[in-house]
Amino acid sequence: NAQKKYAYPMPEYTPTAGNLEAREEFQDMKFGMFIHWGVYSILADGEWVMLLKKIQKDNYSRLADFFNPQEFNAEEWVKIAKDAGMKYITITSRHHDSFSMFDTDASDFNIVDATPYGKDPLKELAEACKKEGIKLNFYYSLLDWRRDDYKDGKKGDEEAWNKYVGFMKAQLTELLTNYGEVGCIWFDGHWDQKEANWHYDEIYSLIHKLSPNTLIANNHHIQPIPGDDVQTFERDLPGENHGGFNHGVEVSQLPLESCATMAGKWGYSIYDKKFKSTKQLIHFLVKAAGKNGNLLLNVGPMPNGKIQPEFVDTLGEVGEWTSKYGESIYGTRGNVVGSQDWGTITKKDKTLYVHVLEAPSEPYIFISEFTEKIASATSFDGKTKVKFKQMKEGTFLYPGKDFDASIDGIIKLKLK
Ligand code: FHN
Image (cartoon, rainbow, N blue to C red; front, top):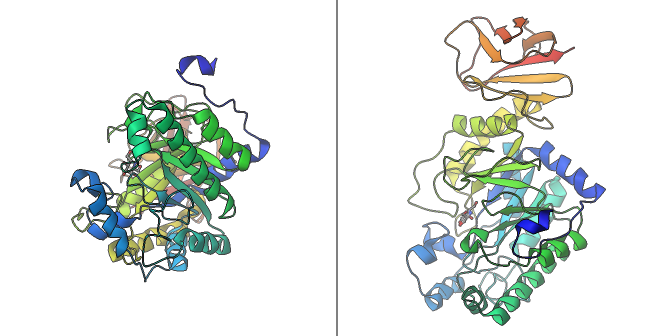
């Protein structure tokens, strides 16, 4: 009994047929753009700057007075995402600093009412996404650093807590009714109060009722709870825990999504210089697909509304790769074989894509424990035959001496 494990009521949830279909579609998309954008971007030191630099609430409010992203152009963002091969966008509608990046009646601390900009960028983004066939998802913080009802509720004031939950429900209703179809609500911040009653029974049920096909992801860093539609892995591949966020978390049967940054922080930072290379990002995408997961890759736009040039350039290069080799990623599923030293495998129907991510030191690649009968093996373009040998311990592939695995050497296998 799922309810028994939890101290608080959890949603009673049976996904609709439409929701199950949306999960498949989500898995087919494989690659999305995460966007962390808010008033914090003005200080150019990441999205945690308010807390880390101990900025007083009133002082922080003043950032809104001059948040005026005149160069924001939703269509440009969508184009950058689309050209990179990304199929969906997940944007922060409200982060931990409580600033709402959308038109909301539930709080004055929002981009329309509190800034000289005075417009709703999420509205523009929703329109641009719809036009270009990109799915739009909203990140929504459970945790709030500014609101008294959150703070008092955290200390045990039940009335305050109920007020806070009511506030979240009002905002979620706005997000799900004013922006057209929403692919996913992506919660974050549960980990701030692991034992709290977040009223998921009410919040999740509200979402599933208002929009049954909208998926719920909750970056809670624990095993999925009843009502989740997607399992997230922050800064890690599914099932891994190098970043320390996914301690003890096991891979579930839900659609999986890894999220990662292109440098260090999620929000724009002028100090972030450790840019991940195009190759590293492609490898992350391919490895995630091999583990049956999506990659949600983050950009933190600048306060003027532009995505920083370093990211745009790298995403352009990633896009060159996805436009050539996307067939080996989109619509595929993973977990064909366990971990292999050389790379991973993705699968679509009777076709397997063997992704060789490390140039082999031997003239062959050995796929351990893979014994399904192969009908043919070729290069990715199908033009060159690849020799193979199958035995009970696994399969040998001999890609030949011109095989290029400098980024991802792909061998295509057709199964019998
Ligand atoms: O604290 C946040 C952080 O700012 C960022 O939004 C990431 C994205 O996965 N999630 C939280 C840390 O778990």
